[in-house]
Length: 97
Image (cartoon, rainbow, N blue to C red; front, side, top):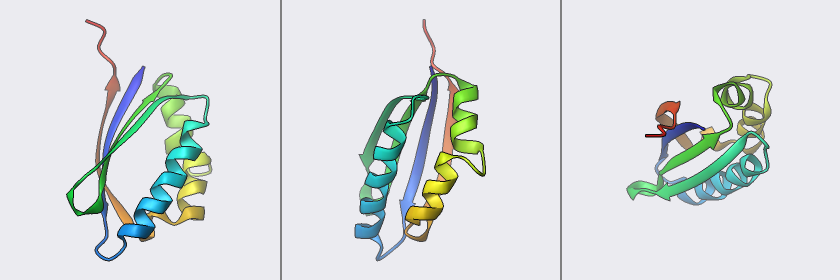
């Protein structure tokens, strides 16, 4: 499984909108066959840390990095970036030691 851990910051004064739109985005992504795991942790200040597992790296790239893909369309439609900002992500294959 290809794992991605991302940190999102909520813009000041946008807490309710960020939470509402983040829930919509998570529910949409959970329905995608490439997504095998999706969990979120609320952080101080209204942001979140999101842990996502994809079938493989190619699945991640097709779903998230495609500018015409599901994720890009949902970001634009639900305006998550009007209420929050992506800060960083760590990515890689899950270790099976």
